[in-house]
Length: 122
Image 1 (tube, rainbow, N blue to C red):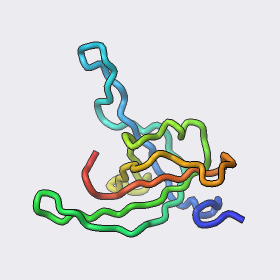
Image 2 (cartoon, rainbow, N blue to C red; image 1 turned 90 degrees about the vertical axis):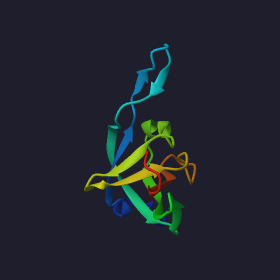
Image 3 (cartoon, helix red, strand yellow; image 1 turned 60 degrees about the horizontal axis):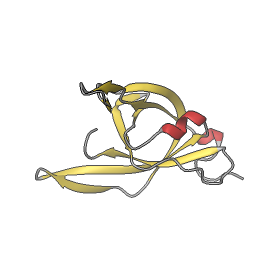
Image 4 (cartoon, helix red, strand yellow; image 1 turned 180 degrees about the horizontal axis):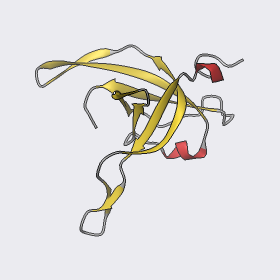
């Protein structure tokens, strides 16, 4: 039996997976640049982990990490920490991808990874 967010009914959030397009840097190299573009919008489960506060420029900065769970899809294997997630229902809620995606049971059904709300903007 699936546990935690690894159930269809637990995928309560809609997340835009966004990446920066690659542009020519003027020297023939392809580098990430420009504004983030939405690659895909999918349903996801979000389980909060213990949050914390850091000090940035002499100010407290709240950070809330989440374990994100999504259904397995081949295009998701391209997601790296250079990507970000935006809540489809609240565009002010932006999460930075912290870890590569992992297949927790090896069955190509679910993918899990860490993302963080707050902290340094991308």
